[in-house]
Length: 421
Image 1 (cartoon, rainbow, N blue to C red):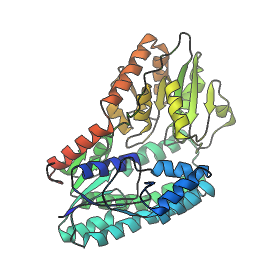
Image 2 (cartoon, rainbow, N blue to C red):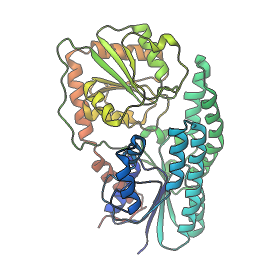
Image 3 (tube, rainbow, N blue to C red):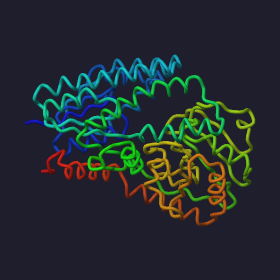
C-alpha cells in the first residue's frame, strides 16, 4: 500500500508532531529526517545514551533530538551532517560553518527524497521549506501530490522588518549577521520556487499565510494550522506575592530580529520601579555597555531548558518582541507556566493572544509602543493575575493533541490524505 514520504532535516517538536499525526492516521510510509534519538532503537543510540551522562553537550543534543513518542514508522536518518553542524556551531563556535553544513543537509535531503519518490512506493510527499525543491519537481513528473510546510514569513516581509528597520534606526549589524543575510538571498529564491510548484502550502500561523500570499502564493493553496503546547505535567499557577516585583522574562537569542533592542530602549526610558527584566539566551547583537548594566536587567545567556522552564514559572509576563517570527514557541511554553504575554503583531504566536485577556499585542519595532505596553502590565494590578490564569487556560485548549487533530482535518479537507479510518 502506498503512503506519504515525510522528509525534513528538522527534528523539533513541531516536525515530530506532524509525523505523529500522519502515523496515527495510517498514512505515513517513510520518515526521512535528520538525527532523531530513540534510545532503544539501535546499538548506536544505546551507546550514545550511555555516554551522555559524562558529556554535557552530548546530553543536551540528545535531549533536543529525543523522539517524543514511540514511532513504528521506518526512519531514514542523516546523522553525519547534524553531528558536523554541532561540532562547528557548538564546540568550535563557527556559526557560519555550521550554517553551510545546514544548507548542504537541506539540499542533500531534497535530492535523496527525489530518488525515493521514483520507487513507486509513495502517493504523496510532505516536506519543509528550503529542503524540498528537487523532491517537489520530481513529484510533478511523477504526478504525486505535494504539501509544503512553511514556518517562516515571506522574505519580503523579513527584509522590511529586519534589514530595513535596522538601517532606519542605525542599529549596527555584525559582519556575521551581514554574511548570513547575504546567503539568504539565494535561499529565498529557492523558497519562492518551492512555493510556486507545491500543490498545497501549510503554514503555522495566520501571519505566515498572509505574508506568503502577499509574496505571490496562490491563496487557494495556502492553509494555516497554528502550533500546539506541551501541557504534559502542567502545574498550578504560582501566584504573585503581595508586594513582589513583577518579573518580565525574554526568552531566546538577544538579537535584532528578536527585537531585544526595542525592549532595552523602552526599559531604559521607563526605568520602572517594582519590576525586573530577565533575558535568557545568547547575545547575538552589538550592545552598549550601558545597556548591559541597566538597573533591574539581568542577562543569563544560554541555559538548560529545565532552568528556562523554572524561570517561566517564577515570571509573570513574557515579552516576545520579535520583528519577524513565523510562530515563536516560547509563547506557548511561557503560557503553560502561567505567564501573560506581550508580543508583537509580527509573531505568528499572536494568533494565541486575546487583547487584555491573556496578554497584549503591540506594534513591532517601536520603542514607544513597547514602553506603553510594559506600563500597562505594571498598572494591571490584580487583573494581571487573571490574565496569567487565562494564559494557562489558553495553552490547555491548544495542546499538541489538538494540533494533530487540526492538522489531519486540514490535510483531509484539502484532499492531501484520505479520511481517517
